[in-house]
Length: 237
Image (cartoon, rainbow, N blue to C red):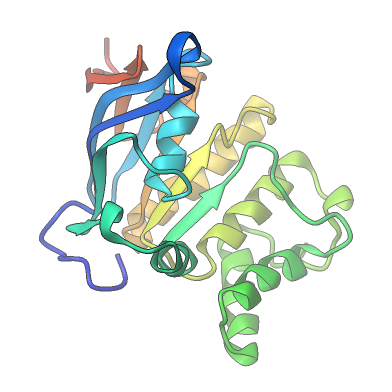
């Protein structure tokens, strides 16, 4: 990961992460001591039924939320010791986020959606143009980058969202159900992009999914049940 992380350590370590919402009789344990190591160049799937804590864990790994107990280390850096500003800077430079709903601005072209994310990150104008075009070309949208989201297929919209997430060259991608709103063919296209990112860029990808076909395309599958992560699941089983 860019920044001061130690390259000899896991890219990310979630250690005994517990997240509690509410108080008294309304207390809900979304996570109960979940632990997970994410190494560079791995494509990881988290599976689990709705309400198992997958999205909560992704939000904590992205430093968008804080654990009630436990900690997350980013290349050895303790997230609990970071200020809000440091977390924001880390997300801008080191982490790419992808959402199930694409979250594209409908009145901006694919290029403008990607470039806008770089502008928020403070990237200079000429570099923004280069990085946006590179990212869109990588996901196979070089000839579609000047189309608005409504003019793109669902798969193309999700690939635009991936381009936006990778344009600043992060080392970690966190994706919440990135293929849930796509048909199987488009979902496979998106997974091929993730696979290529892992292979050529050494990026680590952690995604949540319910789809058994998607699980066949990743390196590691972990089950999240009752707020805890079980041991790795054999994909041959």
